[in-house]
Length: 151
Image 1 (cartoon, one colour):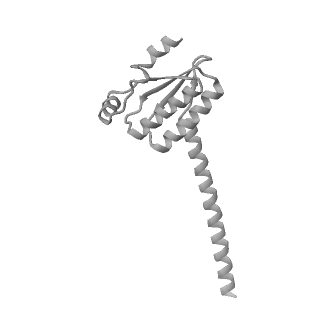
Image 2 (cartoon, rainbow, N blue to C red):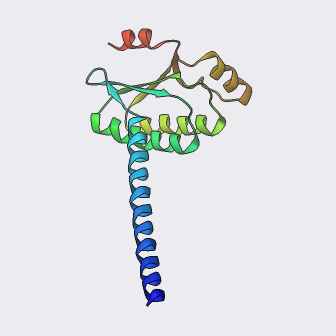
């Protein structure tokens, strides 16, 4: 009798723990997806002009999400020009730069011109040291000047 009760309690505890773990993992994945969605908002300035502010550290996974999310948002908004503001980015590596250039090329295919603003001195220096060439892109020192140009 004691053995049956012990086995039954073990089963209940194991089932409860397994279900609880699945619920928690699902909740954490939902929260992570929400955070990723909020990290790449395309803000409309005018009907034709949008702004993508990128803030914080950019790794390969985040860059992939930014690429996919930005393309969808720009297509949905029918923007002719997108400003990518990098003033909140402290470091950039070759993989991130490559993804950024892929996004610019994909946006060209959608008919959207891309302009980069706010490249920090540290990012500029690292980019030059890594051999990353931004000369094919239109750049601007600050966002205020760039927005005034396009409005």
